[in-house]
Image 1: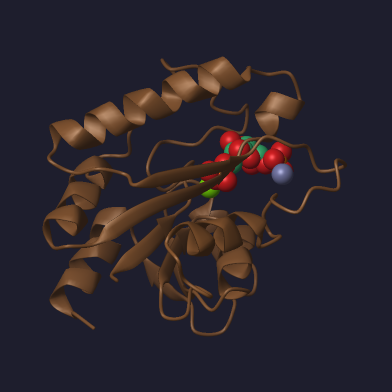
Image 2: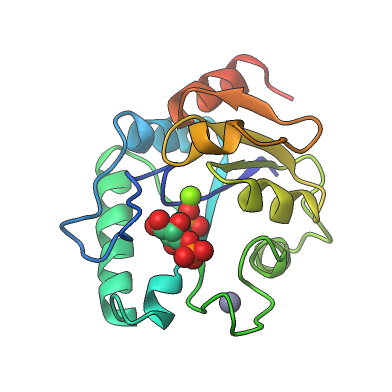
Length: 180
Ligand SMILES: O=P(O)(O)OC[C@@H](O)[C@H]1O[C@@H](OP(=O)(O)O)[C@@H](O)[C@@H](O)[C@@H]1O
Ligand SMILES: [Mg+2]
Ligand SMILES: [Zn+2]
C-alpha cells in the first residue's frame, strides 16, 4: 500500500512555540491540505502521528484536541482528501510513555493498524529530528520540511538519507513525480 505518515504541527498546520492550544490556533500551512488531497486522489493512504504534550501540560484538554482534529479532517475532506488515521501522544516528557516521539510507539501503532510488520519504504514527513528518528526506527524514509521547526532542525545533523523540501506540497510533488 502507498502509505505516508505525517507529523502535524509544522507540517500540516502552523506550529507555535506556545503550543497550538485551540481550534482557532489550528491554521493550515498554505498548500498542505491540498497536498494531502492530491496524495489521496493518487491512491495514497495518509496517517498522522503527533506529539501533543500540551494535554499533559494542561494547555488544552483532550476534547479541544479532538475538535482540532475534526477541523483538520473536515478541511482535508473539503479538498477531496481524507486522513485515514490520526495517532497522538498526550503525554509529557517525564511520563515515560512509549508513544512520545522520538520513541516509535505511534509509528508501530500505525503499522499495526494497517496490518504491516513495519514501515519499510514508507515516507515519514516531519519538521523535527524526533519525527524522522521515530519513523526510521520502523524503517520509514525520512523527509524534512522547512516549515514549522524545520529550519531549526536543519541547523543540526539530519538522519542519513533525509530528503529536505520547502513544505509538504513540495514533498508531495516529489512523491507523485517519482512513483515507486
Ligand atoms: O510536531 P507535532 O509532533 O505534531 O506536535 C508538536 C507540538 O505538540 C508541540 O511540541 C512541543 O514540544 P514538547 O512536547 O514540549 O517537547 C513544542 O515543540 C511545541 O512548540 C509544539 O507545538
Ligand atoms: Mg512538528
Ligand atoms: Zn505518549
